[in-house]
Length: 460
Image 1 (cartoon, rainbow, N blue to C red):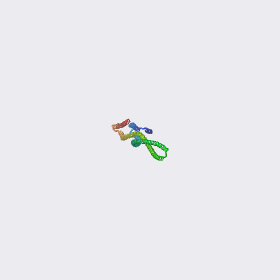
Image 2 (image 1 turned 90 degrees about the vertical axis):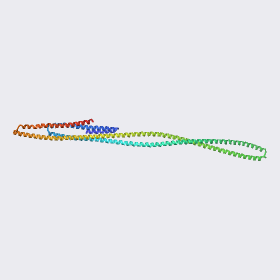
Image 3 (image 1 turned 180 degrees about the vertical axis):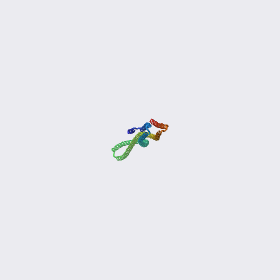
Image 4 (image 1 turned 180 degrees about the horizontal axis):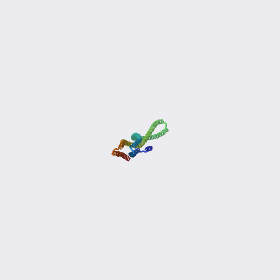
């Protein structure tokens, strides 16, 4: 019972250590070595018990032989039968103990098998989880690569748009330069036209001043003529009317010229304002294009930075994927090592089963040999008893015959016949010694074989 409690405590301690330990394959190997040592210890204990029992039985048998030699066949036969029954009972108990130890070892190996199956299932679940995570990471990497390809396409499209905008801006600059040249030519033409109009206005003003001077001179002449007489009044009046009509015509012409000049100035100012507005619009568009180009350059820089960040993330994910692959390969290798260890354990257990079967077979052979020896001894003892009874009966018959001869006064030569049982008893005593010596030699051989088996298992 104490041995079973020790085994249970040792089992609980090993299971707690197995739960705590990280490198479980080496612990399983260690556990197998511990169990193998326990098995060897059990085998050694069983062999020691068997050896001690056989030695004790040999001593008992030797004592029984001596007792049988001096006491008698019947009493020795009863005690030997009791010893045989006791030996059979001990053999049965030993067989039961051996079966119990075998069942305990089988339970231990079943527990180890269940622990190994649990570990294998746990490793399989971890492998499936890591494989799912690896697949998920691979899908994310593929989606990210697709997004990166889309970003590269967007970058190429923005680059093309930038080049197109640069070409468009260059065309607009060329058109602006052409328009500026045309506007300069138009402004120069308008300036020249304005200068010509101004020169015409100056000429008209000079003619007007000259006409005023002439008009003043004419008025002065008219007044002088009025002063001179009324005779030329009608002619002068008519001449005056003609002059006024001419002056009115001249004034109308001058007003028309002035209106045309003002209209030309207004048209020039309007064209100048339109040109200035076009110039401002072109300048605004140029600024907008420059701002758009600047924003596009910033977007391109941001995209490049984002691309670098995404590339670093991709590298990190690839590194994690490689780590996961290494972890999966290490787990597979660990599982393979555990499988190999389990196979080794199974092979060792099968070897142990073969050893147990061999021990059982040897035990059966020993039992058969003991049974044969017992049967042989029973047969010989029975034969010896019959011989002893026959000799005792013959001796009694001889004594009766001698008594009858003594009564009849027979020949003294009959005394020689009375010595025949002594000679037969002397002949029978070495045969018993020789038979007992053969039994002792057989037990010595069995003892030597058990000692050899004990030393072999103890050294292993």
